[in-house]
Length: 144
Image 1 (cartoon, rainbow, N blue to C red):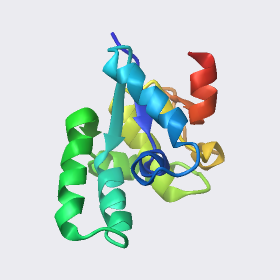
Image 2 (image 1 turned 90 degrees about the horizontal axis):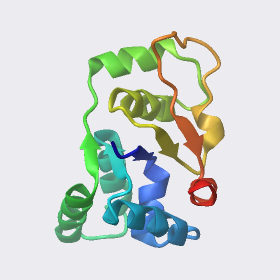
Image 3 (image 1 turned 90 degrees about the vertical axis):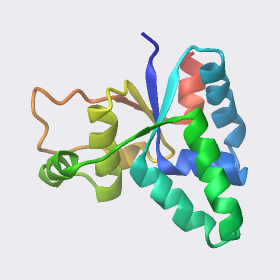
């Protein structure tokens, strides 16, 4: 089974907006195109991307951008159980803890982010919680 690699919102925005470091993200996506991994994104990230893009793009371009993302990456849903689990975890950034619970529920092995510290959970983890590995794009590329 292919490893499931979850992109944090900042990673997909790097790619779309061609921000510094987007080339490493593009290299990760190439691994998906080669069939080596499955890239996943949360529905929350899709909402975040739409929100950020509406500040710079007309609506007529936002929907096609979201469709293109969803045709390439698996969009993982979020539900109340993930929200409740995030409330029980202690971390520095609640939105990233939501992303963590979504990635875990979606069976992701790795989370790619520019903010690994924000995924640090101080308390609330249970034995059943399968913590994915948290890496920057550059760290992931160096390991693969």
